[in-house]
Amino acid sequence: MSAMLSCREVSQLVSESMDHELSMSQNIEVKMHLFMCKFCSRFKKQVLSIRQACRDNADLIGEGAGPGALCPEAKERIKRLLQKGGSG
Amino acid sequence: MDDQATTNKTDPEAWVDRYGDYLYRYAFHRTQDDGVAEDLVQETFLAALSARAKFQGRSSEKTWLTSILKHKLMDRYRTQYREVPHDDIELKADELDDRFDEKGHWKIGPAKWVANPQKQYEQKKFMEAVGHCLKTPPKRLSEAFVLREIDGMSTKEICKVLNVSETNLWVMLHRARIYMRECLEQSWLNPKEFKGELL
Image: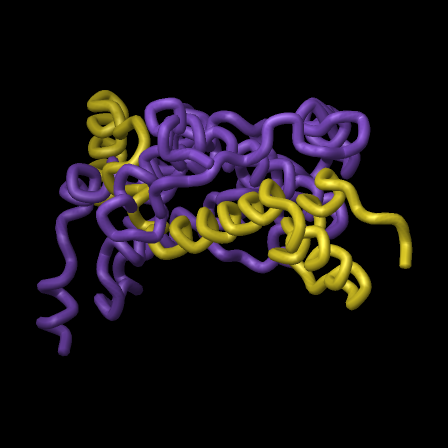
């Protein structure tokens, strides 16, 4: 078996496992590391939880979440354009 | 049937008041640019106006308008990144290495989270924090993050719109997750306030 993976490598692999399947040996090495490492285990749990919450609430990002609304000038401008387009 | 479809349609100018802010935020979080977001919303409404006859009222107006905006957004990414080489700045800038010492151990490891973003009463605040935190990573990383973690697009599709190889996208997403996790830990959980409860 190769040398133990570092937290830097394991966190990268944990992240990659969310985007593609890891090889069997990578999987085993990551699991062994996670078993012993509190920080990398937290990293995994948290990034997965962020993904799940984001996907469950994707709509909220457009609702009240975050700053900003279309400014009144832009609204007026778009309305005028729609009027023109509508009659033209 | 026709009556049903007609009653679901509203006056195009009323769209602006009804859906303008929603579409603007949708575009803003995916571009991190006020001007670009405004342009996209305008293009969306104008495209909707010409396509109005085809709108059957099968989906809600909001869903219909959002899907037009999504197309505009994808076109924009494609045009914007057509010429950008794969190994661009986001992949070279290695400030994330600060998080680990020379042996590759965490310098400051992730804190224990005392709240759960999946709990219903936490969700609105959490998504507000996500909106805020999307400003922290470099722009292209934050775009990749939204497409993957919020919109759930496949990595293959994201590679096409952002014009990156799959291996580079994995690195970009990892970096984006590190940025986002850290920012959420600070802004959403503010662990300093919870010092007593942390491990």
